[in-house]
Structures are given as structure tokens and as C-alpha cells.
Length: 443
Image (cartoon, rainbow, N blue to C red; front, top):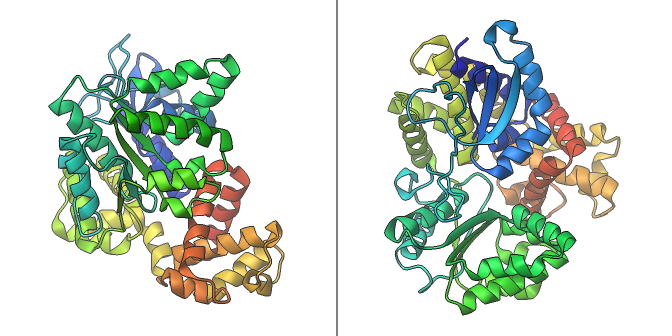
């Protein structure tokens, strides 16, 4: 079996087994090739590599083992790297790929640049602000905060800023990292007594790109240390670009002084793309993958997947994998074959009342408990999950969903949806509960 087909089949199996958001977050960015008898799985950065190696190694190994001995895979290794442009080919023996050009220490994705970012009504202001910062870093709009729901391109736009700055001035010292990485680095520095060395490392940074600042919530020591680093960078005129899945004032457990600083520069919301933008994104991604996608097929998919860019990309990857595996062009029929189960789930319009009943039965509580104002964990968590599922399975607005939960406002529903998405990443039992409920509601 060709190396490309080994990973295509493995990826397709994982997509069947994993929740959509989990697949697109962790498996979607991966590539793979053979180095002798070693299947080398390539991640875009160390954070993704470490997470995949820890959480999915066993699952991937079982799938590959099930393909039989004729595929020639003796073991699996996980590295940071990317395949050469063009059709997937085996890795050369002894070659260690590096998928991210380091750009003076910045861990930037080569595919994240302004030319590959699709601009629509939902992100026009954010894109314009990002371009302004890229042309004149540190002169205004510092910090630049890009905020919005998951999967809308915040990281793409942030890294495009860093890449453009380095193209204009290769000597600029740019650093990109996720807030998870900052917290982990800080913990290690505290253990090793090297906190001062870590802080001094940021003194040399000209541009700091920090992803997902909402993860600072409730982490008091991390906030304390970052507060000092933030002030240091501001004093030295460095450019700071931040992303968050919500506006700073909505981040629970975030100190007021950080809220005011994060919102003290330029803030730009990134909303959900409209139909035309979704279709344009699909065409752009298909073109980048070297696959022909007609306008008809692009709109056919875009009309049925409305949530976010990440889910669009995951769906397109599934369509492309199926077409390549079968050796057929991408048509509406092949899209239905690849995404039929997803479309069926989206097409079925459940009522919020039905969802509440299913969730209440699953957790062995009363439906009236979900509507009450009790905040005990045994009720609050199922209530949040019910709101999350109502958003997934209905076309109701946040306000309409909140109204059916005893008059709660849209911000409460939005917080519940975001919180459940976070919990699914952090806790296997929550993810399993959501997956079980989704299967019940999809029948």
C-alpha cells in the first residue's frame, strides 16, 4: 500500500471514531510518510505533536495494525514536520523534516499567510487591523486582540501577521506560542528555579503572538507572571498580538488589570462566515490541496455546514480523502457518500424540548432541573451540555435557546457552549457523554 493511502485510510477511520471538533483540531493538521518501515506522523508544531502522541498513539497504532503486514509498517513515530509540496511521497531515509520554518524562533505555519486567508463580512475589520500591524508593528494597535468562536481563523490571521513582519524584516525577533505552552513553560521554570531566565527570554522579543488567552482564567500565578511580561513588552515598544474565544471581560477568573490591558489596544471580533465566504473558503482550500472543486459542489457543502471554518476544512478533507482513495472526481454524489452521516445529523431538526428530555434522561435528572436556577454541578453540567447540543442540533439563535431554558440570556448560552467545548478537550468523561448524546440525537 502506498504511504499516502496508509495515512488516508487511517485518517478516515479516525474521523469515523472521533467527534468532529476533536478530529479537525488534532488529526486534521497531520501528515504522514514512510521512512523505511517507520510510519512518521508529522504535526505542525510541538504542541500538536505532544498531544497526539499522548492521546491518540494507541488508537492510531491499532488502526495501522489492522491494515495487515503487507503495508510494511514496523513502528510509528511522531515528529514536527511537513511533507514536501505536491503529492504525498515517502520521507527520505534518515531525513528529519521540520514543517515549521523557525523565523528566528517563531513556530509559524507556512500555510498561514494573508494570501490564503479568505476575507468576508465576518472578518473584514480583523483582517484590516492585522495587515496594519504587519506593516507597522509596535506603532499602534498593541495589543491587537482577535476574538471569536473556535475554528474561525484567529490563529491563521495572527500567524499571518508574524510571517508578514518577518518577510518585511527577517531580523525581527518573533515568538509564537499557545497559552497552554506559556503555562507549562512557567511551571517547568518554577520547578527548575529558572523563572528569571524565562522572563529575560521575553525581553529579546520584538513581536509576541500569544494564542488562546482565555486559558489564563483561574491560573493566578500564570496571570501574575504574564502581567509583568506584558508590561515589559509594552515599555520596550514590542508588538503584542493575542487571540481569545471571548472578549476579555467575559473570561472568568481573569484579573481586572489583565482584562483592561488586553482590551486596551485594538480589539476585533471574528464572526461566523456567511454562505458565500464558506464557499470561497472551500474553493481556496481545495485549490491548495490540488483538487478541482466546482462552485456547485462548494455551495452544496457550504449550505449544509454552517458552524465554523475548522469544521468546513474537516469536511473537505474527508471528501478529498474519499475521492483520492476511490480515484474519482469530487461531485455531489461523492460528497454525499463522504458526508452523508454529517448531513443527516444537520438536516434533522430537533426541538430544544426534545434535547432537554434526552439529556435529563441520560443524567437521570428531571427536565425541570435543567430549567431551574440551581447551580449544583450535578445539574449545571447537564444544563450546559443541553445548551451546547441545542446549538448543534437546532437553527435557533442563542437568545431563542436561552429563552427555552427558563429565560436565560444569550451570553449564558454562549458561555455554556464554549465551556463544554473546552471540557471535551480536557476531560474524557465529558467528551464521552457528549459523544453518546450526539449519537442518541442523531438516530
